[in-house]
Amino acid sequence: MSESVKQLLIPNYSEPTFAVNFYKIARPSAENVTDPFTNKIFKTNGLNCWKITDGNLQKFSKDKIEIFFDAECYLVQWQFDLKVDNTVFEEMLVYYWKGLNANKGPSPLPPEIEDTCPVERVVQYSEPAIFFYTFPNRFVVFAGKENNFNSDAPHLLLIRGELEQEIHLYEVPCKRESLRTRAVFLLVLPREQRFIYWQGKHVDSEHKNRVLEIVQPHKILCRLQKNWTIFSTDQTLENKEPLYFKEAVVGEAHCELTLYNHPYTPRLFYLNSITGTFLATEIEYPLRAKNHIAPYPFLQSHLYTATQPALFVLDNYSEVWLWEGPADLEQIVNYEEELRMANEFVIDYIKSRSLEIGKNIQLKRAKAGDEPLEFTLLFPFWIDSN
Image (tube, rainbow, N blue to C red; front, top):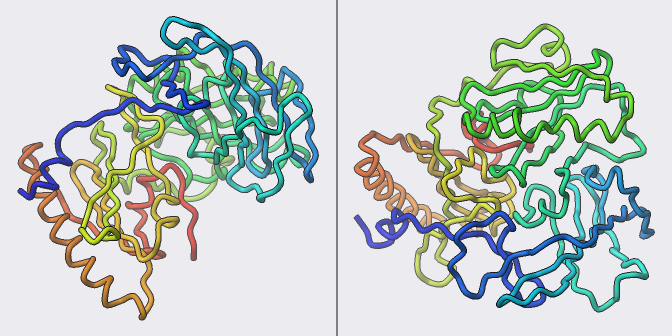
C-alpha cells in the first residue's frame, strides 16, 4: 500500500465551518466543538430577503421568505448574536444566492446594508451548512421563475440534508429518471389535491423518519399556495407507486440500475499533478455530518468545472469509478501520463479498500459525455450533455 493511499483510508472528519468577519463559525447544531477558535451562533435577531430582478431589489414578505426559484437570484440578510470567548455580540451575514438556472447579474445592496458589508456568493446545491440555519422554517426551491409558477401542475421535489435543521427541498424534472433509490421525494399533485412522499427502496431509515415524522416539509409548501392547505398527505414506495403517481412522474424507472446500495457515504478524489507531484485530493461535502450517511454528496459540476482534462475517483463502497474528463490532441501526451498514474493509484486504492472491508471491489470507468446510467445515478441529478 502506498503512503498516499494509506493516509486517505484513515478517517479524518472535520466539522464544516464558515468565516464571518474573520470569525470561524460552526453550524449551530454542532456538538462537542473542541477547536478553541471555532465559535457558535447564539440566536437569530433578524432575517430579510430580497429578490433581484433586472438589477432592482424586491423585498420578500415574511410568510414566503424561505421559498426561492432556481431561475432567480436573491439577497439574504441574517443578523445574529455570536458567542466568542463567553462574550455575545451581534454580527451580520449577507448572502447573494444564485439559482441553478439563473443568469449572472448585478447584486445591489439595499439602503439598510452598508456598501462595505461583505457579501458571500452562494450557488444552489453548493450552499454551506450554516446557510440553512438562516431559515427556521426550512428552505424550498422551485424550478423556473416565480411569475411563471404553475400552481396546477405537478411538482417533484428532492429532499436533501442529513441533519434535521438542514433539510431542504429542490424541485427536479417531473420524470422517473429524476428519482433516486436512496432518497425521499415529495410530489405535489394540485389537481389531485395530494402531497405524496416517495421513498426509495434503499433510503436510510433515519433520514426517512427525520423527513416524514419530524420535519414534514409539505407544511412549508402550504405557505406558497393557500389552497394547498387542504391537500391530503400520502406515502408510496419505490416500485409500488399508485397509478396517479405514474401518470404524473413519467418515463422509465432507472433506480434499479444502481447495483449495490450499501449504507455508505461516497468519497470523491480529484487526481492531478499540478504541483509537480501526483496527488489525490479528497472533495469534502459541505453538509457532511458525523455519524450521518449522505447518499448523494457530490455534483456533476464537481467533475466538469475542474480544469480539463480532469481525473476523478468516486468510491461507492463495493465499486470504485475512475472518471476521465475530455482531452484534446494538444493535451493528449501529458494526459496519458496522468492517466497512467491515475490507474496505478486506483488499483492500489481498490486493493487497500478490499482488505479493509473484506469484500471484492469492482473498478468501473466513465468518460465525459458518455457516462453510463449506473454512474449518473450516483449523483442527486444529472444533466445529459448529449
